[in-house]
Image 1 (tube, helix red, strand yellow):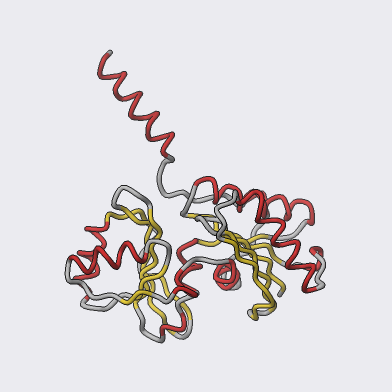
Image 2: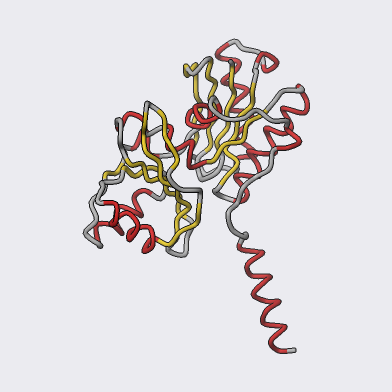
Length: 236
């Protein structure tokens, strides 16, 4: 199966093409430019260099969240548009599960702690364990306070393997609490489209119309609006 995958849930953006689980090529950019400017051009250049037509792709995959509200929306909208135009199936995968797929070199039995910086002393997090060469989910995707996550990991008496753009943040906090952890090396620490493709290979194919983003919590604008409404209600 030929999978064209997209990752745009955080600062970096990437596109990858895999065939039957083998990575054919990947384009990665961490320039700070808006993903709407970079995502499709990267995919177009990737397909051109590999001499593969967009119509030959069997499945479009994307990280559907959690992550940046704008980044997730751009990725999901891109894949929905491609699927509609070409009448192809899609697969939306958890950003955190896609990150866990990059941690397989850590070895069998490793406790993988996926973390994305969610601000306000929180991370988007999920825990996985590598079993039989795949990441097996131990917790749902969740926004969690660093203090709560640290307490949970301390109770396991295991050394977590930290991946994601929130990994360094977790590492610093855990050290302050005397909790041992291992920080994944740079090449496999951050989410990318290859991880999305790997997760999609085990996921469920759906129509583009059924693909929806997963945010886990309200946007800042929605939180501020709710706070304003609550304040107005108290005044009235």
